[in-house]
Image (cartoon, rainbow over all chains, first blue to last red; front, side, top):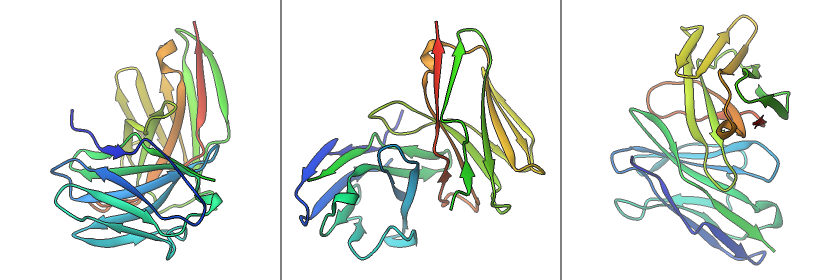
Length: 111
Length: 114
């Protein structure tokens, strides 16, 4: 069964540093998303991406965040200057005719 | 702004019995509802969905019921199995094609005891 692959599974970074979270969506999907889940809280929508453009973003997705599809397979989330409150699980997802498929997530710990 | 609410943080059920997980929503624009199962250190796994034009959808042991007038949906698992123990998330969306964002509830931890 096709999967959404995320790397790394766990990232520890110093506050103020830049991080890039990577995702390989399902190959025939056209719509890509990032969600996050702070420990003990609900999964929250960050951004959706289609045709090399952001189609929708939430209030959480401020100027510190950016997304990119640098080639035909990868989809990345960059956090420019990490804060302690960015510590969370970050889930990539893609949608096609069969609906959403989520990756296993990257646990980001900002220290 | 809790547009999707799961008021029970946890539920414990005996193996073989029915598990009923509940979800309420406030946004009347939502027209597509989903249930996801999540294990620790994994992403949400799709279980079952329902469109607002239906009031029931069944898939094996899983049935989702939608009461639009009450803005309430529920997931029934019959019979419950120990492997069903996980966090269950209700999600809702305004679906206009293949590009739609999901609004999640906080989840309910289901424990099925052998």
